[in-house]
Image 1 (cartoon, rainbow, N blue to C red):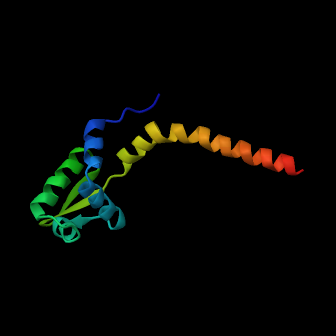
Image 2: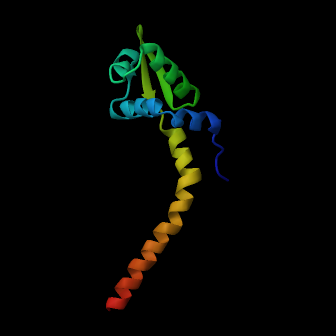
Image 3: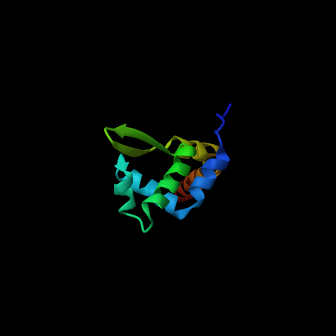
Length: 111
């Protein structure tokens, strides 16, 4: 039985915004960044970045850890993997099988 993805609406809402996708890209490139570090890479106010991060945290795509007085943000790739497993991988299998069959057919026709 496939595991249920919690709150997929929040997840897709979080991924729908280009600014939030940019934040995920930044965290993928360098995990554990502060608000100031993340805001330095974006053309938006710190408040705007904060609001986007809140949406990402609510969707479980970003986790936060306090280090002293500094709040660090970390990418949580698990929900993305769950999306892949549920909606993408099952469509990939037939395509890969077709390519495998084509390759075998070409190899057999050469021999």
